[in-house]
Length: 407
Image (tube, rainbow, N blue to C red; front, side, top):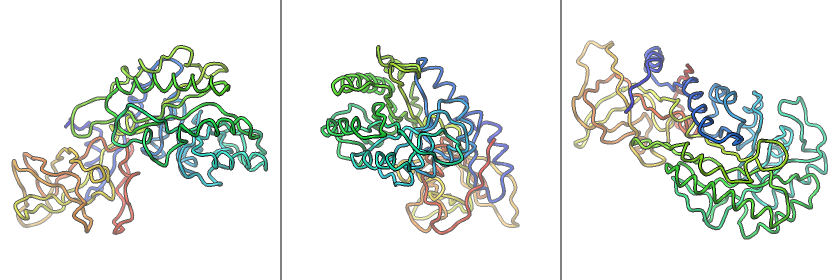
């Protein structure tokens, strides 16, 4: 595993004992954003997917580096409205009326998931309960239009990842076969400004060349479909899904991805005419800028295996258990030992890392060999800045939350 940055080490050492903390690094977030935007062609819009990590300091660090935010709930939209993010896209398969009204009030582009959702939006426009006002306005005003993109579950998408949302039966988007009806409806309903399509397909894809091929195909499909149904294509959102290798050293190459978003006649510059091409990564931007640190409270051997038991666990960092993998960690030695008896320790053995919950599934790592580990040392898990705290079941057993440290 990569060596811990010194500012992260200092932050963990300064944390309250027993250590249980997340550390987020603003500089690392900004560097990641800069690397992505530098690799992509001019005119590609990049939105940060807030679902990956909605901590206000994380969102705030990325807002100034990117074109806006993608949100998937009213709560995430409320976070977005603390800033001046530029473009805002509102996604999600089960938007409530209140969330649709809030999206309209924020001037967001709504990624429409169904005919019913489209009709509800139009009804709100007709009654003035949605709005096209700018982000940060004090109160909704009467609406004339809401900008929408139809989320499409296409029939076939040649892209793999940890989770597939498209090309198979899921609750996401409009079946491609039903597209004629909903596109016709979108052009007829009052208050609906049809911009284009939302085509998010997978989560955590590590093959940038394959992602580029997906982008080329999705853009070409969007051009053909808009032409066939006679509406001007102004927006194609390719979604996110840029992957992170948690257990190895594979890197998603944004330069390879860039080759896929250069479709002639599609890429715009935000003005009228060619479409805005939009990406909405979350994990790739935030994962490497976060660390989860937890102190070893106990070190013991049962049925032939060594266990390090932490002040922490999957209620804080659920991803390893949810995805069934063993997350790498770094041992941060702590020399202080406040007790008058011998300190438990092991050398050059594989260790399972378990948390403080009353379930055998509270495991962050299995069989990870350590050169030396002592009770009281701290384990630091890298690549924890995305889908760490935000994905986890915080209230189970009501343990104290981890300390949140932003550097």
